[in-house]
Image (cartoon, rainbow, N blue to C red):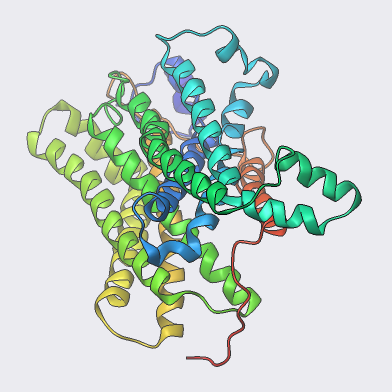
Length: 399
């Protein structure tokens, strides 16, 4: 106890605080924050693409394929933070080779692989006609690569297009529940740990799913508006307006669920609230109250309320939507931080807290986290070169 008190200079741990020796260090760090954050964007982006492919929402046609390929780009890196945290990445396939159907952790491996197959197949059926056109126009090695992509079958007629469309609808419909399970599983994993007061709630599963949809909508809107601004091309305003309203609605649901959970605990006034109130108003005061709830939740709500309920110039409106999308990406990231890190700050004795801030050059530090977070966006840029997502209609005048 004395060593722990001296370690933190008597600031984080006071004389009445108590930590067991194995609670001084945080076990799940930045990588376990990024892991559910990236998987959330995967699930959210796929659900947006399914709104067009499965439910036929024509307003989302300009962004549907971009959403689908974005889901694939993030999916390819969803397990990288987890593998970096665990180490021994070469042993990851043991989950598949030596299955254990009673393990929640190995369950993620099955879900992830099934979802990967669904997304890759849907992308292939969505772009098969484009691959065939590029195959006929290409030469040499590039032509051979496209021949492999089309599986040596260059038939492209009305019958094949109808079949492709049916497969896209089927895979999109199948992928929606799998996407929800993929990310809801993370919430289930945290919520099922009864020993942790901050995590142990049946609402964790639902909160993670809705926050995933928020992050998926936010990243698509942010990228869509930014790329068109960079290329000086027109956005499809109907798509932007619809997605911003959905973002507004799902954000309200996600934040309300989080707040209702806290309010219910505070109303009960049990010993659980005694320690969690100190966590919320103490260690997580800045990251949870001022930033996640205050600036990025209430601030985004006010901005999206203005863009959804009031008329304004298109350029100002799109800038505010883009700004609020970026704010909500940070809000969801902070939510992951406060859940993963915040839950580990509480002592099992319920009489003290530990502290944590990541280093810059550590194996699971800030720099490595930024690299892992940025790489999917770079990959998405190269995907765009392989099969362009957007039209290249130039802006004729500024509205």
